[in-house]
Image (cartoon, rainbow, N blue to C red; front, side, top):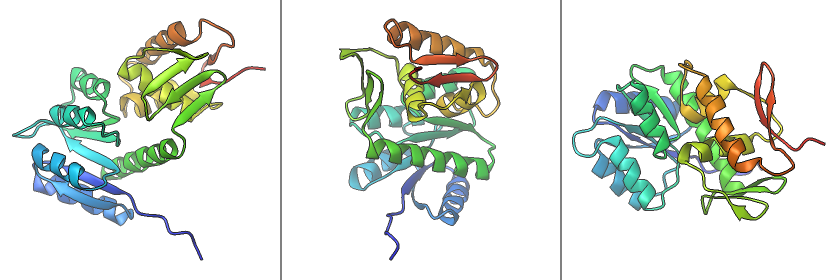
Length: 231
């Protein structure tokens, strides 16, 4: 008999009923269960009462905006992925959403198929993290439960964006990731506005993590970056 796998549940939070219906319907067609909330306070109640695997979260809502909802969730220890869905497309808003603990950022109007694809990706990544709470490469360790990074046993303090970038590199140890892939998966940019942000944050990680041997973060000229131990 095939092994039973519990379907994931996604909470869709938006004060526009038509957006909630559109997103929830598309997710259910992809065999993803959904719960809906029309405002931030309702969303917080739902998360407190039942298991939620991912949240699609509107930013502009009348009571609590999406940034405040996310801050309250993270304060309670909730670590499920959050994809912001909003009409605000300014770079400052993207940076704020991702740097405060969001995992992705889509701007209205959006392609439903792309949103579903991003939800599935984040659910897969969250599933990998749940199965393996400590990610390792050589003497580098990232403990997803404790949100703690160490190199050779010494704790390394990282900003939220540095942590998210390292986490994604560790999930893809040995794979070369292009700047475009990293911009999309770590920063949430569907169309890269400026790929130099990747180089900047890679340099930050190198400064904090690669001061000892072996060097772990490698540049693959003309392609991107890879986390690995060279023989």
